[in-house]
Length: 229
Image: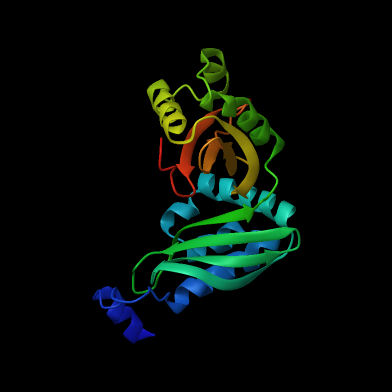
């Protein structure tokens, strides 16, 4: 596939849908194949230098072990979409549900895995994450100082949250927490929001503290915005 690589490097594949390099699918297969007994050292051979750092390797191992415990054995399916020759989203069929694997490669002559995420579709969040999401979601209706201080990281800007609340209320009216759409590990998930106007989703991530506190709280519309707002 050297010709494909040359065309990609020269930008000549941009006129049509992105075609993934064979190395991208190979990387996806390696990740899924490693899930039953995740080996950080083995994965580091396929990834960029950042993955080899002991702290990163331990965190990744813990996340992949947690996801495997929930999903069970997985089989890689067809690519869902390629965003470039070096990045794409793959489907996966697992014992306890479906998943999506997003993989990103470097554009080097010998590509390395620069990043990936495994999302458990309609999965079951970790109990602590679920509890934090349920406690924080009512803030979308009305900001509460005590709830903010109790559940958000000290580094989370109050102004960012109040702006999110204002945007949600303007675009969607009152919203309530719905079912999980995607779980990306024990500390990160995306939920559906049940709103008075239109549809939206809440993506939330927590730190590794005890208790865990929110470090990311983002709302995005998932369909056409109401014509009259």
